[in-house]
Image (cartoon, rainbow, N blue to C red; front, side, top):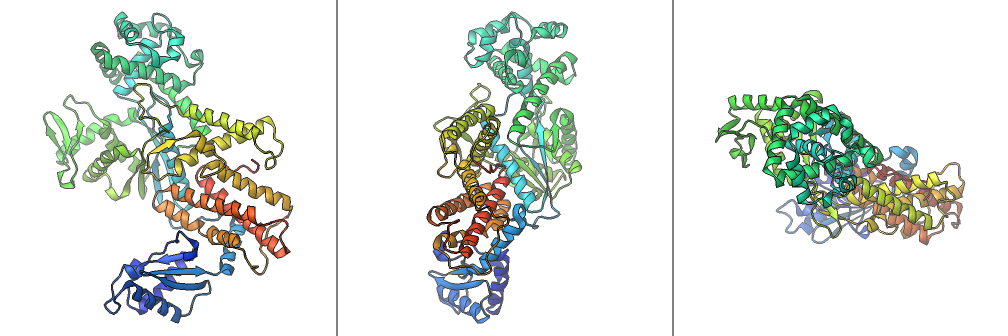
Length: 622
């Protein structure tokens, strides 16, 4: 990259002045008028001979000039209070366009992480509910980071944990047993509008029969209980009904709470009729989630199931007690994290039952054994930050792995604009499928009423595919363009806007580039031998396109896809300004036409490469 060469050349001047280059960092000024690169090293080091950073900066620049400006630098100057700004030659930047034209889909790929192995866990929603809007932020972040890290040369394995045991699952099992019965329970209409079921109805159903009696009835006649197809629902959407109603009953009635806990004990004892219901609900969850994952182009390479290893956690705790990693407190087993300035947490309760951290310790050990990696990433909401600090520290204490090899890829909450924090347990959820359906329908309406010049005539199937690509582009970009620590208030109208910082705007810009190239009818785009005299709009594009590899590296090192989004939006704005102000196909000379076609090709290619890393399709026509 140009930045690497610049650092190498600049270090020669620093060496002559006996200044360490460890503080030498370059960044791109926000305003192109201040150069292509800028460094503040003169303000980061102290030299007695120079009273101010401005004086030191001037000495550094004079020394740099005395060595002879590199062929790619056209200008270097100092700005108060001590910034050093550097401009690159247009002719040199034109050679970067040649790289884009040659490397195409591979432009931006780096090898800085070659040989590195990474295990990235993302999107692990509990199987007793459904995938919700918040899970999409998790999914898009995990998938985009996996793509970016692979683009940097790493080998990434994407895993997922299915939390398929525990009281949360049993509330759903119990809920299905009581409320999924076709007779003597809720009617179909009431189930489909389950949020409005009254407490009196729930209490009445709880009192009517014992769970063991219901289990026996179901074992003999499973057809007496509702199936997703009979309710006309996606499989995982039915699980949400049983979980919400089961949770409401659990919180309303001590009897229901006792029964749920009794069922959990029986499940752990491998009671087969209970296990049958459990497997059925998990199967519905898996089928429904697979549909949604396929729709958003998500993937997992490996699934862990808590039910397979939860007992292993207890054994690790026993060994941890012997090693004095854990200690007993009031009958429970707790951590010992005071010297790490972390609060302690329980790993085994006084009644002998385990918690999430118990199985996560076991899971981390399993991850290490099955997927030996240089880095292990957990893509989980920021509200669990303390939990992961405790988990990573405990794993280090137990000798499972070093903390620096574990990373919590945290992200903030997401809500609809103007909305409040939602609760799965109360049924106040925004299903991902419903949001995607709404976006698809709205995108289709926009496409049908917009100018057809860019897309031409499309069949109904092609229009539907385009609407889906735009819908997914809208929501993925909307959830990735913000920094991970920013709470998002999602707005459907903003996400679909063809003007402004949106996925469809970038897709539209790419389609515009392809439209120009189709009209050019040129078999191969190439740069003229000599760079022509350029207009400001052309220079702005030229001085932006070459930065793409640097942006990818920065996004990867900071786990920040939003940096890529910012770059793509800036590039798209500059291309559209160029497109609107300067003739391309009717340029004054053939050389200028060729150069502008090359700018169009490379701008489109970089937008395509960037959107691909975000998991967003780039329709040729729009």
